[in-house]
Amino acid sequence: MSRDVQKREVAHRVFATEFADSTLSFSEGDDEEARNYVVTPTGARVHRLFVAGILTEVERVNDETRRGRVVDRSGAFVTYAGQYQPEAQTFLERIDPPAFVALTGVAHSFKSEDSNRVFTSVRPEGLNKVDAVTHDRWVISAAEATLDRLAIFEEALDSELRGGDLRAALEAGDAPVPLAAGIPKALDHYGTTMAYAEAIRRLAVDALELITGERDELRMPEFAPDAGGDADIGPLPPTGVQVEPLGSASATGIGDKERATIQGGSELSNDEIRARRDQLPERMERLELKDDTVVTQSDSNSSSTTSREPDLDNVSGPPRRSLTYEDIEIGDLIGSGGQGVVYHAEIPGTAGPDQIALKEPQGQNQTINDSIIESFLEEAQSWEMLATRERQKPRWQDSEYIVGIIATGEKLPWIAMEYMDGGSLDERLADSPNGLPLAEALWVGECLCRGVELAHNYGIAHLDLKPENILFRETSEGKWDVPKLADWGVSRELAEQTGTVEGLSVRYAAPEQFEPQEFGDPDMLTDIYQVGVLLYTIFTGDAPYTGGQLATMRAVVDGEEPTAPSELREGLPAKIDSIIFKAMSREKETRYRTIGVLANELHTLRETVSARD
Image 1 (cartoon, rainbow, N blue to C red):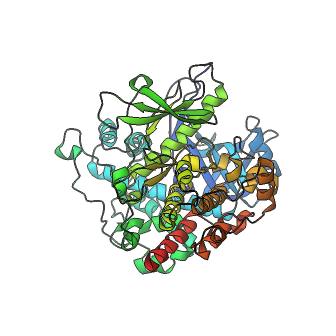
Image 2 (spheres, rainbow, N blue to C red):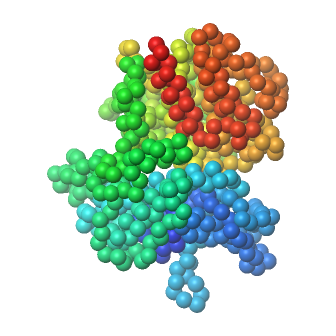
Image 3 (spheres, one colour):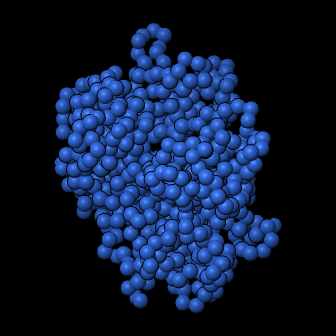
C-alpha cells in the first residue's frame, strides 16, 4: 500500500453552550498531521463534531472566507469556510438563511487578537440542507450523549481521583477512551463543579422537553464551569463504568453506588411521559427519566413477551479484544460480495470466542487501491462504534441486533467479528419459500427495526438492508433465533451522505437511491423503505419487484404498488399490507417518520396476533 490511512474519529454531539464554554485544546503530537482536540467542561474530548441546527446568518469575512452561525437553541456554533473548504464555501454563498442544516467538521479553538478570550469554531468537512425531523433527532442524540457523559463524569468527580490516576481508573473501569482521556483534563483545567454539571444535565432534559412540546425555552447555565459550588445532580442514566483506585477491592467488582435506581426528582413525570408517548420521537421512548428510576424498553414490554422469544443475554455480542492478524487462523470461505470477502476463522489458544468470522477486502494479498482501504476502514469504524454502543449501554440491554466486532486492523484492513452460526435471512427464506411463520416474521421485523434504530440514533444510515446482510445467532430449542445486522459497507454519517451509492442491491433499493435529484439524498428514511421491502420478503418469501434490473428500477421510481402480501399468502392480516406499503412509500414524507414508530406498529400487531392465537 502506498500510504497509511488514519482512522477517522466518530463525530461527537455536544450542545453549543457547553462547546462555547470550552477553553482547553491540545494536540496529540508535534507533527502537522497530529489531531487537535477541544475538551469541554464535562470532559468530552472532541476532534470532530456533528451538528444539526438552524443556519441563521452567513457573513462575508473577506473575499475568500464565509462565516456561518448554526443555532441549536442553547447557543450557536460558528463555522468558517475558506479556500480550503470550497464546497462548504459555495454552500454558504448560495443558501438563503434561515434554514435547517447539518454540519460536520473539526473542532477548533483560538484566542482573539485583542483579548485573552478563547473562542470555538467548527472547520467544515460537510454542510447539507436537512429538515426539522433531522434536527429533532440530533437534539435527542445530543441530549443522550450529554447525559451518558455526565453519568461517568459524576462518578469521576465523586471518586476524588485526579490526573493520571483518574485516567487509569476510568480506563480500568471500561470508560470510553475519549472520556477516559477528556474528563481528567477537564477537571484539572476547568475545576468543573457539580453545580455546572447539574446545569448541563438540566439543559439536556429541557432540550428533550422542547421536542415533546413540554417547554418553550431552555434554562441556560448561569455561571462558569468552576462556579456554583456543590449541588445535588438529578437523574442520570445507569453506567457500567466503575471509578475506583487501581488495586482496590471494588475495582474489579460492582461499585458501592447502585446505578439502576437513581434518587431525586425529574422534570418529566411518569404520567406525563406515558400520556405523550405518541408525540415522542423513538429516542425519547428509550430515554425515560423517571421520578426514581431509569427504565429500559424491556421493562414496558415485559408483560407481552411470548414463550418463543429468546433470552438476549445468551446471544450477546463478544467483547472487544486486542488481536493481530497473525493471531487468527483463517478457515473456509463463508461468502463474498462487493469489495469484501468473509471467512470462518478461529483464535487458537485463547479464552472464547474461539470461532469468529473474518472480513477483509477482496485481494487482501494483492495491491489494494487506497480508496478501497479507506472505504473498508470507514465501514469498520461505523460498525465497531455501533456494536460497542450496543454492548456498553445498560438501558439498551434488550438490544442485541448488531453483529459484534471483536477487533479490527488498520494498515492491513480486516474485521474480526461475531460468528453467526444461524446463517442468513436469505438462506432461511430459501427453506421457507412462502415466508417465515407469522409471529416469528413480526418478531424478526421488529428486531431489525431496533437494530436500525440504534444506528439512526448515532446519525448512521445503513443504506444496504437486504436478506444477505441479516444474520442469525442460534438459540435454545423452542426459541426463535436472533437476527443481527451486518455489512455496514455502504453506511455513511448522514451529514456526509450525498448523491447515489455504488453497489446497490436493486431489489431492495429506494427511489432516492436511483433518482436523488427527484427524491432527495439517501438518508434514514431510505432505511425505512428498505425495511419495508425486507418485511414484504419475510412475509411472502420473495421481494416485491422480481423482474430485471431496469424493470425493477422503473417500478420503484414510478411507485408501482406490488401485489399485496395478504393476497399472496393466506392468513396474513390486512394490517401487514398497510404497514409495508406505508414504509415503502415512493415519497419520503409519506413513510413512517422514524424507524421506532414502525417497530412499535409491528410489536402491537404481534401482540394482537398472539392474543388471537
